[in-house]
Image (cartoon, rainbow over all chains, first blue to last red; front, top):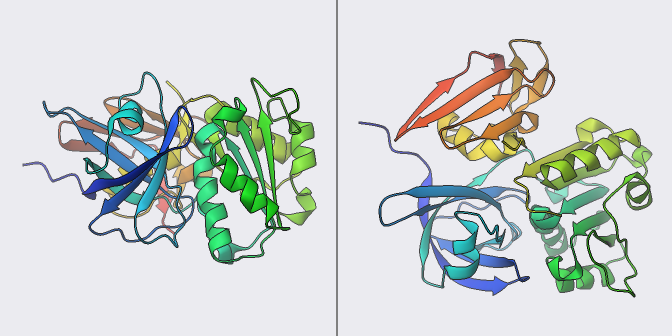
Length: 247
Length: 83
């Protein structure tokens, strides 16, 4: 007999909030959540009535300080097997299986210090948001900058919360770039992240910021290469790639 | 198939090694370069997952699913340092 596949536990959807037309945040309750670190993810597994199983990884959006439930922000992939169910159909009280928290490399603890440079493409901002919420929950004064790339203003995750965090914190700067459509009066960037943008937004390489880049593979590789080009130590640039969802 | 990185395989690796593996260091049997598991190149398909050396692209590890079984081939890894 095969060994049971380890580590899965059942989770119940407590609450779901719409973030954008394509994304929702799911608040999941488990019997035994061991706590997590900012930047970690979970694996979610769905089982159909005929026994067919599908699983995907989703980043945790909530900070370690939220001990009630674990929040995942999920973006719908129209041809996806898991995300359309999570975003559109799963209702409070419904259950899924969850494994995690997972990962110990793409994580930031406030004790790690900074300065902190976070660069997110599309839903790649989710684990970075956990870091910013962690930073805010601890009133950490670590200087932090976030550069978020989204297709349009409607696709920007956590827009109101980011605006509030940015406005109330002299040590935090949030920059947004819109890659497809921008309002005529848009004050931010309106192009793909490029070297001049990184040069403007990032800390000078000499400040040796801790860098976290998350997004679709081409986004992550272009940003990481740009930063190393600007003199950033590749060992301080941590990257996490996920399947293409557009940024 | 889209190239991901070792973070994407973290849950599966945790299942195989029963510990957090993305911070571990792997030494490629082909080119001898060391890479943190999180930075390895990962390809995930329906039947299995392949980890490749980020320096020379040779296969480090394959993990194949057959029903409830996992088959792990580590022949491309010279050593693993856990940390």
